Structure formats: C-alpha cells, structure tokens
Amino acid sequence: MTSALFSIRRRLLGWLLASTCVLGLLALSDTWREARETANDVSDRVLAGSALAIAERVVVSENGSLEVDIPYVALEMLTSAAQDRVFYRVDGPSGTFITGYKNLPFLARYEGQPTAFFDSTFRGEPIRVATLARSASTGINSMPFMVTVAETTIARRQLTNSILLHSALRLVFLILGATLIVWFAVTVSLRPLRRLGAAIAHRSPDDLAPIADRVPKEVQGLVETVNSFMVRLQSALDALRHFTGNASHQLRTPLAVIRTQLALAGRASTLEEAQRAALKADEAVADAERTLAQLLLMARIDATVRARRDEFPTIDLAELARTTTADYVVRAADADIDLGFEGEEQVIVRGEPLLLTELMKNLISNAVLYAGEGAVVTLRTSRAGGEALLEVEDNGPGIPLERRQAALTRFERGALQDRPGSGLGLPIVEEIAALHGGNIELADGPDGMGLTVRVRLPAIC
Ligand SMILES: Nc1ncnc2c1ncn2[C@@H]1O[C@H](COP(=O)(O)OP(=O)(O)OP(=O)(O)O)[C@@H](O)[C@H]1O
Ligand SMILES: [Mg+2]
Image (cartoon, helix red, strand yellow):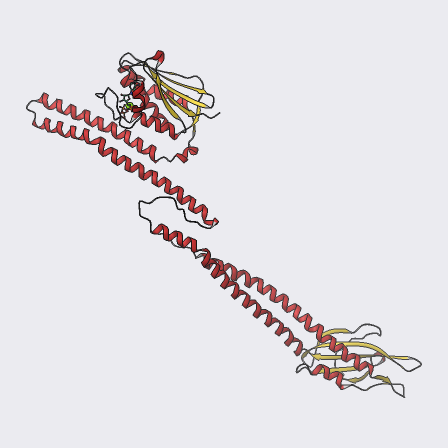
C-alpha cells in the first residue's frame, strides 16, 4: 500500500492560512501607518487651533512689550482627550522668552509661514509640537512673536492602537470565515470522488466495465486512464480465459494419445512394438507442442490491445518477407517445394515485427504442407495505392471456394486432416492483419490453380 500524502483539505487550508497570514501582516502594517497619519492629522488640527487661540491673545502692552493672557480653554481642548499633558511657550522678537515652559523645544520661524509640526521629547516623554509665527501690531510698527504648543502623544497612540486592533480583529474573522468556507467547499467537492470510490469498492472482481459515474473535470483524466486500463485488463483476462479453454480442449487429444502409446510401449512384447508406440507418442508430443505454440500466439494477439497500434515501429515488409522466406528455403526444398520471393521496392508499414513474422511463417508452412510435392510457392510484396500487399501463392490443390470462409474459423481444418495442425494458422493470420488495421483474402492461385492468400496492410508513404 502506498503511504498517503497530506489530504487535499489540509493542503488547501495550509496554503490559504499561510497566504492570508502573510497578506494580512502586510495589510496590518499598512493600516498601522495610515492609522498613525490619521491620528496625527486629527490631533495636529486641535494643536494648531490651540496655538492660534493663544496667538489671538498676544497684545502689545502700554510699555511696548508683548503680553499674553493665556486662554485656558485653548489648552483644555487638548487635555480633555486623554491623560495627555500640554505645554506651551510664547517667544517675542529675536527669540526672547515671554511666558510658558522655558525648556520646551521650539522652531525659530517667521511670520507668514504656516503652522509647523514636529516630534520631539520633553521631560523624557515623546511630544508633538506645533509652532505658529505671528506679529502683534502697536499701531506704528508690528512685533513678531512665536507661539509653541506641545502635547504628549498618549491619545494619538491610543487612537492608532485602537484602529490597528479593529483591523486585526476584522482580519482574524476573515481568515476564520475563509477557513470554514474552504473546509465546507472541499468536503462538498470531494463527494463525487467518495461516491466513485464506493462504487468501485462494491464491484465484483469480474466487473471491469468502464466507470460511468459523473466526476469533476479535474478527475476526468484519471477516470479515463482507469477506464482504458480496465479495457486492457479485460482483454488480457479474455485472452487468458480463451487460452485456458482452448488449451484444455485442444491438448486433451494429443495427451490421451501419448498416454495410450506409452501404455502400449510398456506392455509391448517386442522391441519393435515398443519403438513404434514411442514414435507415435513422440509425434503426439510434437503435435501438442505446435498446438500450444499457436495457442500462445493467439493469446498474445488477444492481449495486445488494438489501441496500441500507433506505438508499433515502422518496418520494411519486403525485407521481413525476404528473410522469413530465406529461413524456410531449406525446409521447403526437403519437401520438394520450390519456394521463392518477389519484391523489388521497399514496402513500409507500421507493425510489430514478431507478429508479422508469425503471420508469414503460418502462410509459408501451410503452402509447404498442403501444396504437395513439386509445387511452386511464391511470396510477393508490393504497394497498391495506400496499401501494402503481401501475397503467398502456391499451385497446389487450393481450398474450394465454399470452404474458404470456414478455413478462417478457429480449429477448422480442411480435407487433409492427417497432416499435423490445429486449425489456428489462418485465423491467426487474419487476427494479426486486423491488429495492424488490415485484412486478408483467400483467392485462386496462379492460372486458377492452388491458393493465393492476400494480406492487405495500411502502407506508410
Ligand atoms: N495453401 C493451402 N493449400 C491448401 N489447403 C490449405 C492451405 N492453407 C490452408 N489450407 C487448409 O485450411 C485449413 C486451415 O488452415 P490453418 O492454417 O488455419 O490450420 P492448420 O494448418 O490445419 O493448423 P495450424 O496452422 O494451426 O497448425 C488447413 O487444415 C488446410 O486444410
Ligand atoms: Mg496452418
């Protein structure tokens, strides 16, 4: 069993949480920056108001010096917000200190400039300072002065923190909500897969029918792969069933002959009698061997799924026919058969070389076996249009027209039943041709005598 990877749900949640946390932290830092600016903006405006209120009360006294009557309401405007403390100072021309906190930091400024703000510290506490430059008129000339108002920053920090806290809470709720939605969505989305799993689990082992359940698009490819695997498995199982059924049927007779002959040899009174029985047993073993080889070949064709045709290599049919013919020349000569090959040009097809060789072997051995002594057998390859042609012709007795269809049926044998064979040769040839997208035809031999087996395959230009 393979070890399971993390569940899809956990992966999705992991990605969601990690990404929202990172994005959330970025958003929070931005919010914090903005909250600070907002808090400063609001408080600066009040600070500027206070400075202005003080500036309004600066007057030139009778003796020509500047006097200030500090309006405490102006300072209370500030202190009412939090526990902030407020400081101020008023400076006259050339920076002469008039009233307020002498050590309070201030900016040297000129009349007409807008109120300036800056951050500083006073008595060990962070403060925000506003400076306003004005002048008081004596009627003859004007006296410039500067009002500086500062406050500690507790209220600003509180406002910033409260904005930040609210944003953080909203973010946490958002992440929790998204987590719940993803959890629910994944559960619902995976339901078809669970149904699919249950449907397959409840199937009987023999049921290799394609999966017809509706599944999400993303899983469609997987289901199609499983379905095509099932088709291949089904054809492999069919091939196995065919093979076992055919083998037990076809091998029963030669095995019975072997047992009988061996029993006869055991009981034989003379050596010649025993040798005769052993020879017959040996022939039966050869027969069983041939039948088994044909059955195995048949099973291999059955198991080769037709869809795999595209994966066959390209080969030269003429070259293959030439070498296969050459392999049989000596054997044919022993049977007094004149075996030859004709074919000048290359005939390229897409094919499985071993199966096409078996196809040719079956046709040559049929011709050698059934055409009779002195016969002429010719293999010929050619191209006709988009087709590759392989012909095996002999001038023997041939197969009567009405028997030709039957000769293509499994286990059907012709008149010459005394010759060894299982009746699988021609059906195998037909199946191999079909597996390559072609067909076969049984026709008369040369001059209307004998037999021509014509195999047509799709040719490659
Ligand atoms: N060239 C031929 N000339 C005459 N008869 C043939 C020829 N080829 C096949 N036949 C007949 O067709 C029958 C079926 O042939 P097939 O090759 O299918 O089976 P087989 O030769 O009997 O057995 P196997 O090929 O499985 O060993 C043969 O038994 C034979 O009677
Ligand atoms: Mg045969």
